[in-house]
Image (cartoon, rainbow, N blue to C red):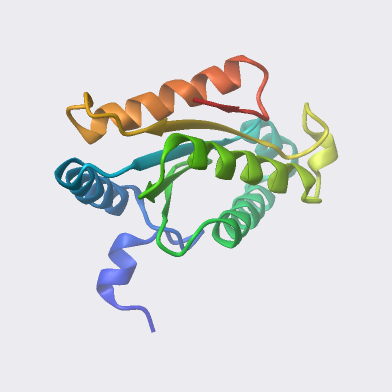
Length: 170
């Protein structure tokens, strides 16, 4: 049985950490990174054209897509990484002790895993499959707060979507 603390920090549908817990963790990791001059990266992920999928297949089928994407994320990243549902169809992953090149490599692997997965109804999507767009950001010494790191990942994600989706931008 799940404890009240576990229920308070997890997303009910996906079982991933929730946005509130993510903010606690990114604050801790950011401070540790600055103190010990280590690497820290973030990947922000968005399921491409998710609203269209929901409108076509219904919210229950959309929930199944999110659960399947969650499984791919969990199966691909390290146990030491923190995956959270950021909101709606957005996910975010904290990669402690990880530089930009390594995070970019993981993001590309995630993109290919999702693209290769045979999701039900994927053929009805604009790209003919369920795909994800991702923004990768890494900690640099000039960053003053974890908010800047999140903003950089979000800006990179926005660029990935602007450039046609199903891609990774930094």
